[in-house]
Image 1 (cartoon, one colour):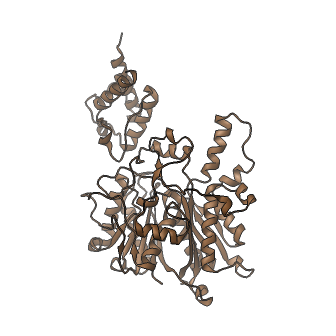
Image 2: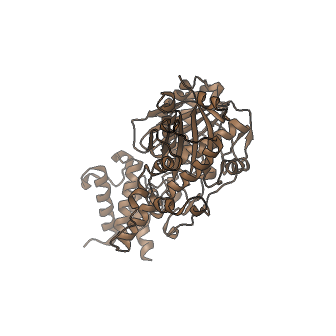
Image 3: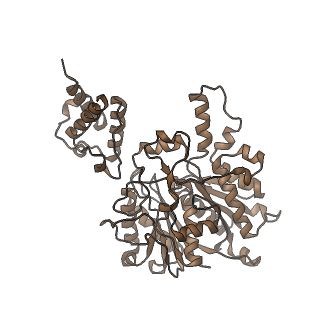
Length: 402
Length: 91
């Protein structure tokens, strides 16, 4: 079967406007969570989050593109520019039909929806912006990547809530291994830090007003973030033929469904996804040096995820290093797995395991080798990245060093 | 004539009965919500109904249920919480 490698990475997220800035922030254990600077933040009960501060689309995109895009597409375009630059690829006429884009996203163009609803319901206006539909549609960021880079292969957006990016990246890898594409732009994007978006989450009573402390006994809920991370996934023989630098192998992935509850996670489904990813990658628990956990800092997720890792890893669960970088960049929902894959590249490429910052005290229900407080150096040859979504949808990726 | 506090109890029991799909007369004030078949998501819906009905804000985080300062695990606990919140609102 064809193997898949990563030859480019790009991001804009609360920790930085590039992969190198994000690496530095993760190494330093910098937390980007703070008071939200959005309209009507004073009417939120949990008015904190991790924003992409000072994002100026005009610094990256032309006027027409800005007019046609919501913030979530703008993030994707900016991140893809960096990834394409690193890969050193152009979709020439021979490659274009074999080059596609599959992204993960959950909310669509939330800022556009918020603005439109405010206009017609709150302000009583008779019209919304003419580009409301092309801005808010879920496939918009994937479409804009094809427009910008001339990609004529398969393109679509995957929506599986908090697992969207991992499902998307797994799907992109499968398109390459099955021979339907040679190169894919993939990853995810989310821009849900709007008044309406946050009010929806408040309703579930799972948001923290105090901070994101995954796996900590004092954890009291999730904190949202925003941003995008985009990767160039490429057939290994294609990358080698052109002498591209290989950042990592996409060694395997697995997807499972809990079939239990629409919001509560289930350890069996999560464990099956972890075990499936190991099997697909032809790895054993002993090979894995780092797990980037889903680690949302909700009571239910973290307890269940710890049990799932224990079930899948057995005694190796005592050894394998685990962290949740959501403690720094917040929960990017449909973009989460993509930004978290950057922490995996940091571990594989530079031997640095990003920490779970803000962690204070052990939870008796969570027996894991947690990397807390400060980054840890380690020689890491293989990693897993977990994503477990509402809907009971689980997707786990396995990467190995080049 | 029923006083205000009895009215609160009645309205809370109506809300709980709707959530539990039972007749209000079958709701034992000493019962735990769990024994009425109300799970954590059911409680979130009950709190929403209480907030809409009584124009109060119930401090409740599903990740730290005790942190709000009210015992919402029993019918009587919920009634007491609503009485306190309505009383604080009127103060």
